[in-house]
Structure formats: C-alpha cells, structure tokens
Image 1 (cartoon, rainbow, N blue to C red):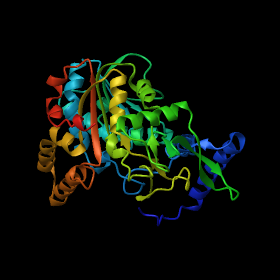
Image 2: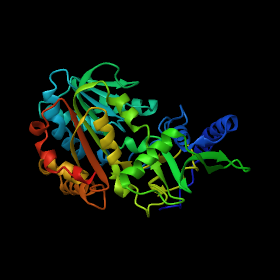
Image 3: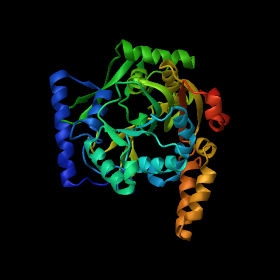
Image 4: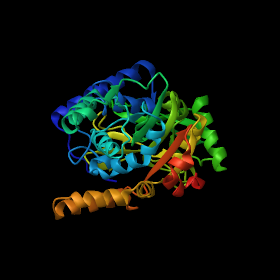
Length: 397
C-alpha cells in the first residue's frame, strides 16, 4: 500500500475543498452520513465528484489503467465472445456499455464486430460523467469510420423500453457506493462519516437499519458463521435493485460483467478484517477514502456470489463465471494476438502486444484478480457460448 502520495496542485486542492465543504454542510444539517452516501458524493457529486469533474482518470497520466486502455486485444475478445448473442438477437440488436471509460473499448469492439459481421443497430453508452461523455464522443468520431460512429448514442438513464442485445460493464460494479458494516457484541453497525473538531472527516459507527442488518445476516447464514467482534467489511444491499434498474427491460440477450473481486467465502475471510476498500490516486494505491475528496477513485472488490444471486433474481440464466485470463483465452485471445502480431509494423509493436497479453492474463496482473461473469436471457446458451461454458467455475460460488 503506497502512502507516499503526490501533492495535488493548487487548483486540485481548491476543487477538493469545495466538495469537502459541501459534504460538511450536509453533515451539519443532518448528522453523520452513511459511508455509501459519502462515497457517492466523492465520486458523483455534479461538477465536483471524481467521475463528474474533468480530471483525466485513465491511462499513464491518470490514476489507473483498465484493460481496454492496454490495447485492443481485450475488446476484440469480448466482441468475439458476444457476437453470436448479437446475431441471435436479430437486426435490431443493441450493444449497451455501462461507463465507457475513454471510449477505447467501444472503438475496438465496434471494429471487431464489423469484422465478424455482427454489428449492432445501436451502440449505447451510459456515462454519468458529462466530461467523459464528451471525450468519448470526440474520440469515437475521430477514430471510427462515419458509418460506425453513427451507431453510437449516449443515454442519460437506463432504457425504459424493451430491448435486446448485449449489456457490458468493465470495472463498473467496483465504483458503486458501498455500505461499510462492522460487528460489535453480535450486533450489526453501519459505518458513517462525521466531522471532528478540526473539520476533518472521521469514521463513526451507528446501529444498522433493517436493510443493512438483513444483508449482513444473509451473508452470515450463507457462510455458516458470524463475523467476529470488530470485523469490518463491505456489502451492496442495493445490488439486486441496481441490476433490475439497469437490465430490467432487456428482453433477450447476454450480460457480461468484468471486475475484480472474490467469491463470498474468500471475500469475507476472517483475516480480511478491514474489508477490501481501496483508493487510487495517480497510480498510487492506499486505503484512506476520507482524504482528497473528488480527486481520488474509491473502490471495493465485488462479491461475485452476490452478483450471481442478483442476476438469477433478475431472471437471467448464469452462463459462465471464470478468471479473466480463462474467459479471454476461451474467447479467442490466441487468434486475436496472432492476427495483431502479423499486422504489427516492427519488433517494438510485437513486444507491446506480448506485454498486453501478459497484463491481461498473468495471475499476478489482471489474469486472476479480475473475473468475468456472463448471464443470458432467452438464448440457447449451449449453442452460443460453448467456449465460455467450458471454463465455467460456478461451483466456486
């Protein structure tokens, strides 16, 4: 954990101070706020939150690097894996990407889908950041042929009408505002954020409400044990409702989530006594979410067992749960690499491709820290997803 963080600029300090003051006003008006509310404000407060303001987030000059930013191989494999589902959904099929990052995934995915004769009628992007929407729009307009860019559309909210196609989200779930809980004398408490005498944000615990307490009791029943005194971790009690809001109108198609996390029994190991919460600032990782509001990313790992429960509860059929490395290999990584290597102009480009594969697949990199969970609705999953089913590890859930 790197605590030697770079110093923010004067403008960044002023920006963060404005958000911090807004949060202090909210606390002064209503008392300590749940950590989930604090995280939501830090990440999504209009014009001030980390994902709502204009600061660069992705790539070597940002705070972290996602799989699509490494190069085109990730998007090409995802497109190959889900192209059969798009074809099965017919001529009006849609590709619906949550987030969208820098636009790199959409660019590479659309190009690969065109090569496989599986272009969707529309490519939707749901992006909460106005700044990122404009960056995506500019990039895709500049780097895609006009006929492909014409398929792109930016949504302000999830579709409110029936649609069919593919829903895709890479590193989206880890940025959902999470509930932090702890256990004292067998009772469940929810972590809140307050302000101390020096106007600094501090952590305080309050008795959990029925929703949070019920979610924690569900975890304990599933695990077959209670959490020890002082044990602290995270839970997403709103995950089933969030998934229903996002995908409830999807009449037919596939849903793919890629993110970092664990199955439940690994997420809530007794020795993991302070949860999985992490912050990212200029490629430094630390565990203090109460500093630098609006300037750093705040994330938590995903309980993939909870995601599986939510998907099934929303009416989707589980297809495959696998390490990212297994999913990509099953989805044609070898062929995508070979094709890209053949087109590479020099040895430096070929070396960069090899490094891309290593980052995506090695256990110590993204290969096993990231996992892929694939669902389907009203599709012949055996016919459409045979390679992904072969690497399914759902028995671990």
